[in-house]
Length: 302
Image 1 (tube, rainbow, N blue to C red):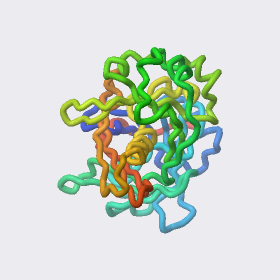
Image 2 (image 1 turned 180 degrees about the vertical axis):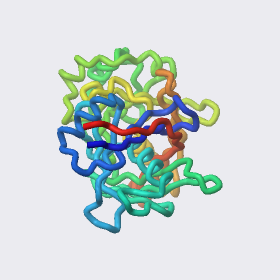
Image 3 (image 1 turned 135 degrees about the horizontal axis):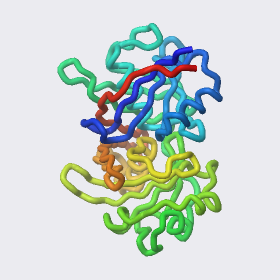
Image 4 (image 1 turned 120 degrees about the vertical axis):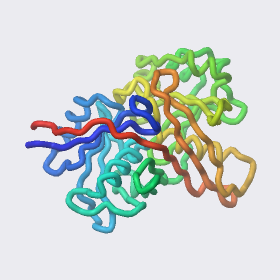
């Protein structure tokens, strides 16, 4: 059995930047175990598997695996998969034309808009499948231990460390400085003791840091999912922009937009464009998008 795949670098405009993604463009006939084994073999933050949709009005069913587990939703896998399918204009023998794709995922429907330049696909942007939800607050001491930080490097003026989700949950943590963000180091043993997989996917650290075109710098650790550090995490940053809109004193926001840098401290600079809408005090929509570049194409022999 030959299984086709394509890899792309996501949230970047240059090769060897951003977050690498493997897209298995025809996963028909693969078992859950085979999908998990293939994701572990690629050993990237995520691998996606494209399947026929349950509803023919949608583009595809997309399943997302880290090296150790399946996710109900993730950001860079959606952005990259949309880029791959829209670039070829084909999905499992059907046309994938136009500038709107819809993926069926375990967290719900994920609509994506395709961005073109002179007809060529260069980027895509997703709308999160679920509204922003806020969960448990996490003790500062737990976050400090898990990220090798001092407690006073964690800022609590706007919010304490808290689980936020637009489809999957991350612990959102504001830090005091760009230097503190750069100094953070993941400790998997602390995650095992305090932050099991069912509590949150990982810890998302961020600092408002106006630097050129960037408004925010961030890092994300998810060691229990086989991702010690992720170069670009769309699902975390789409929840972050939702949280920031939630905390904003304005009741109505047409578009709260932020340019978020991630991966700079691990040599994979990434740029994510985040946006949120708010009406009558409630965050009503969140979006994340960015550019992609193709890297490799081949087949897996099974």
